[in-house]
Length: 166
Figure (cartoon, rainbow, N blue to C red):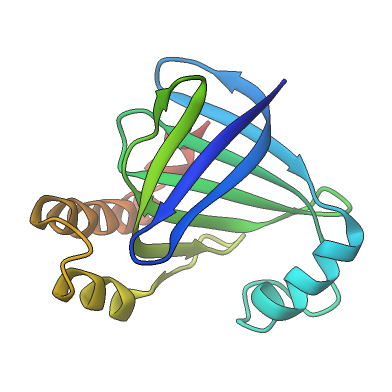
């Protein structure tokens, strides 16, 4: 079954994603999308390989997302065409909500990349600070984003992160 997720980026509009629903429980929703090879080649070259997240020449074959109803983040797990794990891209965002059969969440700018070896890097701090300065985020959203990124970095370091998403 396919579902629609509306991902709002303050100051940049909303993107609608159609995702294949795998699991939905009171804690989190899990979706999967298989990535067409033509799209994967461009996507990997322009984003993932260029920024050093995945090796050049490796293509993403599928994306599994974990979207939480109470947590202020979502997780995108990247899998290669051979199903090998490539890493986790964690978006700091509002908890997912449902209205009229569709799902909604708002990006809070901060992100975290977690490599297969567990090393991580915080991303987009400058975007976050600019968004907060421009009042694209409420003071509460800014506070939550900052708290959540700190919590996630600690959770990755002590191994709790991986238990949370599964």
